[in-house]
Amino acid sequence: MSLAVVILGAGEGTRMKSDLPKVLHPLGGQPLVVHALDTARKLTDLPPVLVVGHGKEAVEDVVGDGVTTVEQAEQLGTGHAVLQAREALRGRADRVLVSYADMPLLRAETLGELVGRQRKNPGPITMLSLIQDNPRGFGRVVRNEHGGVAAIVEEAVATPEELAIRELNAGVYCFDGPWLWDHVDQIPLSLPKEEYYLTDLVGMAVDEGSKVEAVVSRDADELLGINNRVHLAEAERVLRQRINERWMRAGVTMVDPATTYVGPDVTLGRDTTLHPNTHLRGQTVVGEACVIGPNTVIEDSEIGDGCRVTASVVEEAVMEDGSDIGPFGHLRRGARLCEGAHVGNFGELKQSTLGPGAKMGHFSYLGDADVGSGANIGAGTITCNYDGESKHPTVIEEGAFIGSDTMLVAPVRVGKGAKTGAGAVVTRDVPPGALAYGVPARVRKKDEATDDDQV
Image 1 (tube, rainbow, N blue to C red):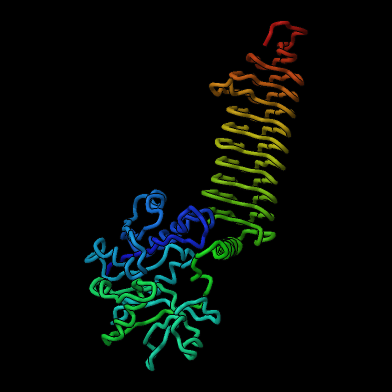
Image 2: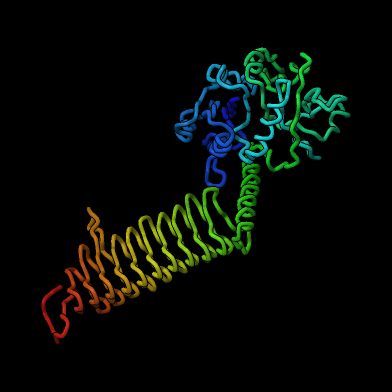
Protein backbone atom coordinates (compact mmCIF):
# COMPACT_ATOMS: atom_id res chain seq x y z
CA MET A 1 0.00 0.00 0.00
CA SER A 2 1.64 3.26 -1.14
CA LEU A 3 1.78 6.66 0.50
CA ALA A 4 2.11 10.08 -1.14
CA VAL A 5 3.10 13.20 0.77
CA VAL A 6 1.83 16.65 -0.20
CA ILE A 7 3.62 19.61 1.40
CA LEU A 8 1.93 23.00 1.24
CA GLY A 9 4.38 25.83 0.71
CA ALA A 10 2.77 28.41 -1.55
CA GLY A 11 2.09 31.18 0.97
CA GLU A 12 3.70 34.58 0.69
CA GLY A 13 4.58 34.82 4.37
CA THR A 14 3.96 38.56 4.65
CA ARG A 15 4.45 38.52 8.41
CA MET A 16 8.10 37.56 7.91
CA LYS A 17 8.66 41.07 6.52
CA SER A 18 11.15 39.75 3.99
CA ASP A 19 11.92 39.57 0.29
CA LEU A 20 12.88 35.93 0.83
CA PRO A 21 10.02 33.40 0.46
CA LYS A 22 8.98 32.21 3.91
CA VAL A 23 9.80 28.55 3.26
CA LEU A 24 13.39 29.48 2.36
CA HIS A 25 14.19 31.13 5.69
CA PRO A 26 16.92 29.07 7.39
CA LEU A 27 16.40 26.94 10.47
CA GLY A 28 19.45 25.13 11.84
CA GLY A 29 21.34 26.07 8.68
CA GLN A 30 18.72 24.62 6.29
CA PRO A 31 15.67 26.23 4.66
CA LEU A 32 12.35 25.43 6.33
CA VAL A 33 11.16 23.54 3.27
CA VAL A 34 14.20 21.26 3.33
CA HIS A 35 13.32 20.10 6.84
CA ALA A 36 9.80 19.24 5.68
CA LEU A 37 11.05 17.39 2.61
CA ASP A 38 13.63 15.40 4.60
CA THR A 39 10.89 14.26 6.97
CA ALA A 40 8.63 13.29 4.07
CA ARG A 41 11.35 11.15 2.49
CA LYS A 42 11.55 9.06 5.67
CA LEU A 43 7.93 8.03 5.17
CA THR A 44 7.68 7.08 1.50
CA ASP A 45 9.72 6.23 -1.58
CA LEU A 46 7.48 8.39 -3.78
CA PRO A 47 8.89 11.87 -4.49
CA PRO A 48 7.19 14.44 -2.22
CA VAL A 49 4.80 16.81 -3.96
CA LEU A 50 5.48 20.42 -3.01
CA VAL A 51 2.82 23.04 -3.69
CA VAL A 52 4.60 26.29 -4.56
CA GLY A 53 3.40 29.80 -5.26
CA HIS A 54 5.16 32.88 -4.00
CA GLY A 55 8.82 32.76 -5.00
CA LYS A 56 8.23 29.65 -7.12
CA GLU A 57 11.50 29.82 -9.06
CA ALA A 58 13.63 30.45 -5.98
CA VAL A 59 12.00 27.58 -4.08
CA GLU A 60 12.40 25.18 -7.01
CA ASP A 61 16.09 26.10 -7.27
CA VAL A 62 16.60 25.18 -3.62
CA VAL A 63 14.67 21.89 -3.52
CA GLY A 64 16.25 20.58 -6.74
CA ASP A 65 15.56 17.12 -8.12
CA GLY A 66 13.63 14.39 -6.39
CA VAL A 67 10.67 16.67 -5.68
CA THR A 68 7.52 17.14 -7.75
CA THR A 69 6.41 20.77 -7.66
CA VAL A 70 2.92 21.98 -8.57
CA GLU A 71 1.93 25.63 -8.66
CA GLN A 72 -0.88 27.31 -6.78
CA ALA A 73 -0.95 30.52 -8.78
CA GLU A 74 -3.69 32.03 -6.59
CA GLN A 75 -3.55 31.35 -2.86
CA LEU A 76 -7.17 30.36 -2.26
CA GLY A 77 -6.77 28.26 0.88
CA THR A 78 -5.45 24.86 1.91
CA GLY A 79 -8.17 22.90 0.11
CA HIS A 80 -7.41 24.70 -3.13
CA ALA A 81 -3.68 24.05 -2.60
CA VAL A 82 -4.19 20.29 -2.27
CA LEU A 83 -6.39 20.33 -5.37
CA GLN A 84 -3.34 21.44 -7.38
CA ALA A 85 -1.67 18.11 -6.54
CA ARG A 86 -4.53 15.93 -7.78
CA GLU A 87 -3.33 15.57 -11.34
CA ALA A 88 0.17 14.58 -10.20
CA LEU A 89 -1.01 12.00 -7.66
CA ARG A 90 -4.41 10.62 -8.55
CA GLY A 91 -4.22 6.86 -8.91
CA ARG A 92 -0.61 6.70 -7.68
CA ALA A 93 -1.13 6.22 -3.92
CA ASP A 94 -3.65 4.62 -1.59
CA ARG A 95 -3.09 7.24 1.11
CA VAL A 96 -2.14 10.92 0.98
CA LEU A 97 -0.44 12.73 3.86
CA VAL A 98 -0.84 16.52 3.84
CA SER A 99 1.64 18.61 5.80
CA TYR A 100 3.24 22.06 5.66
CA ALA A 101 6.59 23.51 4.65
CA ASP A 102 6.41 25.96 7.55
CA MET A 103 6.06 23.24 10.22
CA PRO A 104 9.71 22.06 10.24
CA LEU A 105 9.68 20.43 13.69
CA LEU A 106 7.21 17.65 12.87
CA ARG A 107 8.84 14.32 13.60
CA ALA A 108 8.75 11.43 11.16
CA GLU A 109 7.69 9.19 14.06
CA THR A 110 4.59 11.29 14.68
CA LEU A 111 3.62 11.37 11.02
CA GLY A 112 4.29 7.65 10.78
CA GLU A 113 1.85 7.07 13.64
CA LEU A 114 -0.71 9.18 11.79
CA VAL A 115 -0.28 7.13 8.62
CA GLY A 116 -0.44 3.88 10.56
CA ARG A 117 -3.71 4.90 12.20
CA GLN A 118 -5.24 5.78 8.83
CA ARG A 119 -4.15 2.39 7.48
CA LYS A 120 -6.43 0.79 10.08
CA ASN A 121 -9.17 3.42 9.87
CA PRO A 122 -12.23 2.30 7.85
CA GLY A 123 -13.00 5.99 7.31
CA PRO A 124 -11.30 8.40 4.90
CA ILE A 125 -9.46 10.75 7.30
CA THR A 126 -7.11 10.60 10.26
CA MET A 127 -5.99 13.97 11.56
CA LEU A 128 -3.32 15.21 13.94
CA SER A 129 -4.52 17.09 17.01
CA LEU A 130 -2.86 18.74 19.98
CA ILE A 131 -3.91 19.05 23.60
CA GLN A 132 -2.76 22.21 25.34
CA ASP A 133 -4.14 25.16 27.29
CA ASN A 134 -2.98 27.88 24.90
CA PRO A 135 -5.16 27.53 21.77
CA ARG A 136 -2.93 29.80 19.60
CA GLY A 137 -5.90 30.45 17.32
CA PHE A 138 -6.30 26.80 16.30
CA GLY A 139 -9.69 25.29 15.60
CA ARG A 140 -11.25 23.07 18.28
CA VAL A 141 -11.76 19.33 17.78
CA VAL A 142 -15.28 18.28 18.82
CA ARG A 143 -15.66 14.59 19.65
CA ASN A 144 -18.83 12.46 19.46
CA GLU A 145 -20.08 10.11 22.18
CA HIS A 146 -17.98 7.29 20.73
CA GLY A 147 -14.75 9.30 20.87
CA GLY A 148 -14.56 9.88 17.13
CA VAL A 149 -14.11 13.32 15.60
CA ALA A 150 -17.50 14.96 15.05
CA ALA A 151 -16.40 18.38 13.82
CA ILE A 152 -13.70 21.02 13.69
CA VAL A 153 -14.90 24.42 14.86
CA GLU A 154 -12.82 27.47 14.01
CA GLU A 155 -12.08 29.77 16.93
CA ALA A 156 -13.80 32.76 15.36
CA VAL A 157 -17.20 31.02 15.32
CA ALA A 158 -16.88 28.76 18.37
CA THR A 159 -19.34 28.91 21.28
CA PRO A 160 -18.07 29.46 24.83
CA GLU A 161 -18.39 25.72 25.44
CA GLU A 162 -16.41 24.94 22.29
CA LEU A 163 -13.76 27.53 23.18
CA ALA A 164 -13.16 25.62 26.40
CA ILE A 165 -12.10 22.52 24.46
CA ARG A 166 -8.35 21.88 24.85
CA GLU A 167 -7.96 19.57 21.85
CA LEU A 168 -6.82 21.62 18.88
CA ASN A 169 -6.64 20.92 15.16
CA ALA A 170 -3.02 20.88 13.98
CA GLY A 171 -4.04 20.95 10.31
CA VAL A 172 -2.10 17.81 9.33
CA TYR A 173 -4.11 14.97 7.75
CA CYS A 174 -3.75 11.51 6.28
CA PHE A 175 -6.47 10.78 3.71
CA ASP A 176 -7.71 7.79 1.82
CA GLY A 177 -6.34 8.73 -1.60
CA PRO A 178 -9.31 7.97 -3.87
CA TRP A 179 -11.73 9.59 -1.41
CA LEU A 180 -9.61 12.75 -1.21
CA TRP A 181 -9.40 13.24 -4.95
CA ASP A 182 -13.14 12.64 -5.35
CA HIS A 183 -14.02 15.21 -2.68
CA VAL A 184 -11.34 17.92 -2.75
CA ASP A 185 -13.07 19.85 -5.55
CA GLN A 186 -16.36 19.79 -3.63
CA ILE A 187 -15.09 21.89 -0.70
CA PRO A 188 -17.43 24.88 -0.28
CA LEU A 189 -16.18 28.44 -0.53
CA SER A 190 -15.65 29.95 2.93
CA LEU A 191 -16.44 33.58 3.61
CA PRO A 192 -15.34 36.26 4.19
CA LYS A 193 -11.87 35.35 2.86
CA GLU A 194 -13.31 33.42 -0.11
CA GLU A 195 -11.01 30.45 0.35
CA TYR A 196 -11.33 26.67 0.38
CA TYR A 197 -10.23 24.89 3.56
CA LEU A 198 -9.19 21.29 4.15
CA THR A 199 -11.02 21.34 7.48
CA ASP A 200 -14.32 21.18 5.59
CA LEU A 201 -13.40 17.68 4.40
CA VAL A 202 -13.80 16.49 7.98
CA GLY A 203 -17.40 17.72 8.03
CA MET A 204 -18.05 16.14 4.65
CA ALA A 205 -16.80 12.76 5.86
CA VAL A 206 -18.89 12.94 9.05
CA ASP A 207 -21.99 13.89 7.05
CA GLU A 208 -21.45 10.78 4.92
CA GLY A 209 -21.41 8.68 8.09
CA SER A 210 -17.68 7.91 7.75
CA LYS A 211 -15.28 7.66 10.65
CA VAL A 212 -12.75 10.42 11.25
CA GLU A 213 -9.99 9.61 13.73
CA ALA A 214 -7.35 11.76 15.42
CA VAL A 215 -3.84 11.06 16.64
CA VAL A 216 -3.22 13.27 19.68
CA SER A 217 0.13 14.93 20.22
CA ARG A 218 1.11 16.49 23.54
CA ASP A 219 4.24 18.11 22.16
CA ALA A 220 3.29 21.68 21.32
CA ASP A 221 6.81 22.43 20.09
CA GLU A 222 6.51 19.79 17.38
CA LEU A 223 3.51 21.55 15.85
CA LEU A 224 4.96 25.04 15.89
CA GLY A 225 4.17 26.82 12.63
CA ILE A 226 6.48 29.56 11.40
CA ASN A 227 4.55 32.74 10.65
CA ASN A 228 7.03 35.41 11.76
CA ARG A 229 10.58 35.78 12.95
CA VAL A 230 9.60 35.31 16.57
CA HIS A 231 8.26 31.86 15.67
CA LEU A 232 11.46 31.19 13.71
CA ALA A 233 13.58 31.93 16.77
CA GLU A 234 11.34 29.69 18.90
CA ALA A 235 11.78 26.86 16.40
CA GLU A 236 15.54 27.40 16.35
CA ARG A 237 15.62 26.98 20.13
CA VAL A 238 13.57 23.78 19.98
CA LEU A 239 15.67 22.29 17.18
CA ARG A 240 18.92 23.15 18.97
CA GLN A 241 17.63 21.57 22.17
CA ARG A 242 16.65 18.37 20.33
CA ILE A 243 20.02 18.07 18.62
CA ASN A 244 22.03 18.86 21.73
CA GLU A 245 20.11 16.42 23.91
CA ARG A 246 20.65 13.65 21.35
CA TRP A 247 24.41 14.19 21.33
CA MET A 248 24.70 14.54 25.10
CA ARG A 249 22.90 11.21 25.49
CA ALA A 250 25.42 9.77 23.01
CA GLY A 251 28.40 10.77 25.19
CA VAL A 252 29.21 14.36 24.21
CA THR A 253 29.74 16.97 26.94
CA MET A 254 28.25 20.42 26.41
CA VAL A 255 29.33 22.89 29.08
CA ASP A 256 26.42 25.21 28.23
CA PRO A 257 23.91 23.68 25.78
CA ALA A 258 22.03 26.98 25.52
CA THR A 259 25.02 28.58 23.78
CA THR A 260 26.12 25.54 21.77
CA TYR A 261 24.97 25.35 18.14
CA VAL A 262 25.22 22.00 16.35
CA GLY A 263 23.77 21.63 12.85
CA PRO A 264 21.47 18.73 11.94
CA ASP A 265 24.08 17.09 9.67
CA VAL A 266 27.01 17.34 12.10
CA THR A 267 28.51 14.13 13.57
CA LEU A 268 30.24 14.07 16.98
CA GLY A 269 32.41 11.44 18.69
CA ARG A 270 32.01 10.35 22.28
CA ASP A 271 33.94 12.05 25.07
CA THR A 272 34.22 15.22 23.01
CA THR A 273 33.63 18.45 24.94
CA LEU A 274 31.97 21.52 23.42
CA HIS A 275 32.52 24.79 25.24
CA PRO A 276 30.15 27.79 25.10
CA ASN A 277 29.58 29.72 21.90
CA THR A 278 30.66 26.85 19.67
CA HIS A 279 29.04 26.69 16.23
CA LEU A 280 29.31 23.44 14.24
CA ARG A 281 27.76 23.68 10.79
CA GLY A 282 27.23 21.82 7.53
CA GLN A 283 28.72 18.36 7.01
CA THR A 284 31.19 18.67 9.85
CA VAL A 285 32.56 15.51 11.50
CA VAL A 286 34.26 15.75 14.91
CA GLY A 287 36.05 12.70 16.31
CA GLU A 288 36.33 11.37 19.84
CA ALA A 289 37.89 13.07 22.87
CA CYS A 290 38.17 16.47 21.21
CA VAL A 291 37.91 19.83 22.97
CA ILE A 292 36.12 22.43 20.86
CA GLY A 293 35.68 26.06 21.82
CA PRO A 294 34.88 28.37 23.38
CA ASN A 295 34.08 30.92 20.67
CA THR A 296 34.70 28.57 17.74
CA VAL A 297 33.13 28.10 14.31
CA ILE A 298 33.67 24.88 12.35
CA GLU A 299 31.94 24.40 9.01
CA ASP A 300 32.04 21.51 6.52
CA SER A 301 35.24 20.18 8.06
CA GLU A 302 36.70 16.92 9.36
CA ILE A 303 38.21 16.91 12.84
CA GLY A 304 40.05 13.75 13.97
CA ASP A 305 40.31 12.22 17.43
CA GLY A 306 41.95 14.10 20.29
CA CYS A 307 42.00 17.47 18.55
CA ARG A 308 41.65 20.89 20.14
CA VAL A 309 40.16 23.99 18.53
CA THR A 310 40.18 27.12 20.73
CA ALA A 311 38.50 30.39 19.73
CA SER A 312 39.17 29.70 16.04
CA VAL A 313 37.46 29.34 12.66
CA VAL A 314 37.76 26.15 10.59
CA GLU A 315 36.17 26.09 7.11
CA GLU A 316 36.26 23.20 4.63
CA ALA A 317 39.44 21.92 6.25
CA VAL A 318 40.85 18.75 7.81
CA MET A 319 42.50 18.28 11.19
CA GLU A 320 44.06 14.86 11.72
CA ASP A 321 44.30 13.11 15.08
CA GLY A 322 45.99 15.06 17.85
CA SER A 323 46.33 18.34 15.97
CA ASP A 324 45.32 21.67 17.47
CA ILE A 325 44.71 25.30 16.60
CA GLY A 326 44.13 28.52 18.47
CA PRO A 327 43.35 30.78 19.98
CA PHE A 328 42.33 33.03 17.10
CA GLY A 329 43.50 30.73 14.30
CA HIS A 330 41.87 30.29 10.90
CA LEU A 331 41.88 27.22 8.67
CA ARG A 332 40.44 28.17 5.31
CA ARG A 333 39.30 25.93 2.47
CA GLY A 334 41.74 23.18 1.61
CA ALA A 335 43.82 23.48 4.78
CA ARG A 336 45.06 20.29 6.47
CA LEU A 337 46.77 19.81 9.79
CA CYS A 338 48.41 16.39 9.84
CA GLU A 339 48.71 14.25 12.94
CA GLY A 340 50.08 16.21 15.90
CA ALA A 341 50.48 19.46 13.95
CA HIS A 342 50.07 22.70 15.87
CA VAL A 343 48.84 26.17 14.85
CA GLY A 344 48.97 28.81 17.54
CA ASN A 345 47.33 32.19 17.94
CA PHE A 346 46.64 34.23 14.83
CA GLY A 347 47.84 31.54 12.43
CA GLU A 348 46.11 31.14 9.07
CA LEU A 349 46.29 28.40 6.42
CA LYS A 350 44.64 28.29 2.99
CA GLN A 351 45.04 25.38 0.55
CA SER A 352 48.01 24.29 2.63
CA THR A 353 49.20 21.22 4.53
CA LEU A 354 51.08 21.34 7.81
CA GLY A 355 52.87 17.99 8.08
CA PRO A 356 52.91 15.58 11.05
CA GLY A 357 54.30 17.25 14.15
CA ALA A 358 54.96 20.52 12.33
CA LYS A 359 54.43 23.74 14.27
CA MET A 360 53.32 27.23 13.33
CA GLY A 361 53.23 29.03 16.64
CA HIS A 362 51.82 32.46 15.94
CA PHE A 363 51.16 35.36 13.59
CA SER A 364 51.85 33.51 10.34
CA TYR A 365 50.15 32.85 7.00
CA LEU A 366 50.59 29.82 4.72
CA GLY A 367 48.85 29.89 1.35
CA ASP A 368 49.25 27.14 -1.27
CA ALA A 369 52.00 25.60 0.83
CA ASP A 370 53.12 22.08 1.66
CA VAL A 371 55.05 21.83 4.93
CA GLY A 372 56.91 18.63 5.81
CA SER A 373 56.90 16.76 9.10
CA GLY A 374 58.60 18.35 12.10
CA ALA A 375 59.13 21.70 10.39
CA ASN A 376 58.94 24.87 12.47
CA ILE A 377 57.32 28.03 11.11
CA GLY A 378 58.52 31.10 13.01
CA ALA A 379 56.34 34.02 14.02
CA GLY A 380 55.42 36.40 11.25
CA THR A 381 56.22 33.98 8.41
CA ILE A 382 54.27 34.66 5.20
CA THR A 383 54.11 32.75 1.94
CA CYS A 384 53.82 35.36 -0.79
CA ASN A 385 51.75 33.10 -3.02
CA TYR A 386 49.90 35.60 -5.23
CA ASP A 387 51.60 37.72 -7.89
CA GLY A 388 48.49 39.66 -8.85
CA GLU A 389 47.43 37.18 -11.52
CA SER A 390 48.16 33.63 -10.36
CA LYS A 391 48.72 31.62 -7.19
CA HIS A 392 52.08 29.82 -6.76
CA PRO A 393 53.18 26.98 -4.44
CA THR A 394 55.64 26.94 -1.58
CA VAL A 395 57.27 23.69 -0.37
CA ILE A 396 58.96 23.51 3.03
CA GLU A 397 60.56 20.11 3.48
CA GLU A 398 60.87 17.90 6.53
CA GLY A 399 62.63 19.40 9.56
CA ALA A 400 63.10 22.85 8.05
CA PHE A 401 63.29 25.84 10.40
CA ILE A 402 61.76 29.08 9.16
CA GLY A 403 62.92 32.11 11.12
CA SER A 404 60.61 34.85 12.32
CA ASP A 405 59.34 37.35 9.76
CA THR A 406 60.52 35.27 6.79
CA MET A 407 58.91 36.15 3.45
CA LEU A 408 58.74 33.13 1.10
CA VAL A 409 58.16 34.48 -2.41
CA ALA A 410 56.52 31.64 -4.35
CA PRO A 411 57.20 29.54 -6.25
CA VAL A 412 59.94 28.47 -3.88
CA ARG A 413 61.25 25.39 -2.06
CA VAL A 414 63.06 25.18 1.27
CA GLY A 415 64.97 21.90 1.46
CA LYS A 416 65.04 19.27 4.18
CA GLY A 417 66.60 20.58 7.38
CA ALA A 418 67.26 24.00 5.86
CA LYS A 419 66.91 27.23 7.84
CA THR A 420 66.04 30.84 7.16
CA GLY A 421 67.23 33.74 9.24
CA ALA A 422 64.89 36.21 10.86
CA GLY A 423 63.51 38.73 8.37
CA ALA A 424 64.80 36.86 5.30
CA VAL A 425 63.08 37.47 1.95
CA VAL A 426 63.52 34.17 0.11
CA THR A 427 63.07 34.43 -3.67
CA ARG A 428 64.87 31.25 -4.80
CA ASP A 429 65.11 27.65 -3.61
CA VAL A 430 67.10 26.87 -0.47
CA PRO A 431 69.05 23.58 -0.70
CA PRO A 432 68.69 20.92 2.03
CA GLY A 433 70.64 21.78 5.17
CA ALA A 434 71.47 25.30 3.99
CA LEU A 435 70.89 28.64 5.72
CA ALA A 436 69.23 31.56 3.92
CA TYR A 437 69.45 35.06 5.37
CA GLY A 438 69.17 38.70 4.36
CA VAL A 439 67.14 40.82 1.94
CA PRO A 440 67.08 39.43 -0.68
CA ALA A 441 68.16 36.22 0.99
CA ARG A 442 71.60 34.75 0.37
CA VAL A 443 72.52 31.14 1.06
CA ARG A 444 75.22 29.64 3.20
CA LYS A 445 75.41 25.98 2.41
CA LYS A 446 76.08 23.39 5.07
CA ASP A 447 79.71 23.39 6.26
CA GLU A 448 80.42 26.67 4.42
CA ALA A 449 81.40 29.83 6.28
CA THR A 450 79.89 32.28 3.75
CA ASP A 451 78.33 32.38 0.35
CA ASP A 452 77.40 35.54 -1.51
CA ASP A 453 75.14 33.84 -4.04
CA GLN A 454 71.63 35.24 -3.91
CA VAL A 455 68.85 32.84 -3.04
